[in-house]
Image 1 (cartoon, rainbow, N blue to C red):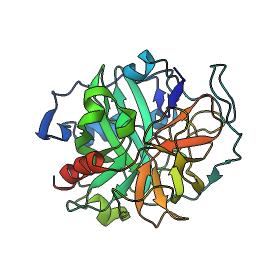
Image 2 (image 1 turned 90 degrees about the vertical axis):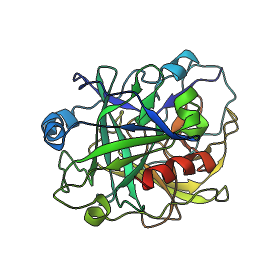
Image 3 (image 1 turned 120 degrees about the vertical axis):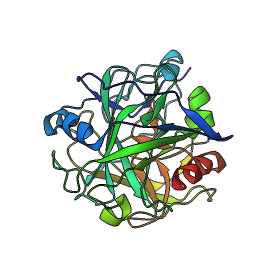
Image 4 (image 1 turned 90 degrees about the horizontal axis):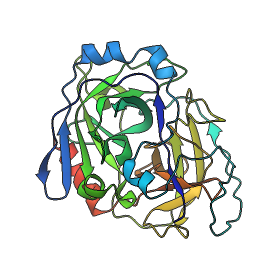
Length: 308
C-alpha cells in the first residue's frame, strides 16, 4: 500500500481528564460534549506548552495499521515504492496573522497535539472548521482539552483561547477514520461574554461545490523546516488524487504537520468561501497537500454543529 501521511503534531505533556462517550444526534453525524472549564484550559494551555508542541510520530491508529506514516520534511520523498510524480514547486508563503484563522490545541491518548482551524459562519456564531483527525481517533475516541486560538502568532493569543463545548464529525470518519471524510467542526463557548464570530469574524462556507477550483490554503505548519509559530499559505488549482484514489483534491503546497485543519478558500485570499481543510500528503509525492471534498456527509456535521 502506498504510504500517506496525516499532517499532525504533538507536544510531550500529559493529557487531561478523559471525557464521556459520544452521542449520535443524527444518522450522519457523531457528536461529543466537552466539559473542561475555561479556567482549567486557560491554565493548562500555557504559552510554553503551546510553543513546545511538536509533530507526533503517529496519531491515527487506523492509518498506522494501513502503513501510513507521518509526513516527511518538505521536499523529501520516502523510500516506499510508488509511481513517481512530477516535483511541484510549492513553497508556502509566510503571512501576517488573520483574525478568524488560528491554531487548535487538544489532548489525545496521553499526548498534546496541535492543528489549525478557521471560524466559519453559523447560526450560533461559534463554529470552527478543522480536520476530522483533530477531533477523533479510533483507538482513543474524541479528544480532550480542545481550544481554538485565533490569530496565534509566536506564542501570542491576541483574542484569547476559545474552549469547545462540543465536537462534531461525519459518521464515516468516526466509524472507520475514512480519509475521504476528514472534516469536522467544533462549537466554541463564549469568551468574555462574546461569541467567536463577534470577536474575530467568520468565513462563508460551501458544500457540494464543483471540483478543480483555484484555492488558497492556510495553516500553521510545525514540522521542519517550519516551527508552528506563524501562519503560512499556499495557492494553486486543485486536481484529483491519482495516487490513492481518494475523493480528496490536491493543491501545490509544502506545509507540514500542524497545518492540518487549516482552511482552503476558493480564490486568492482569506476573505473567500471555505471549501476544504488541509488533510494529508503522500510520502511518495513531493509538495502536494490534499483536502477532503466537502460533500453531504461533512455538510451534515456542519449543520449539526451550527445548530448547537
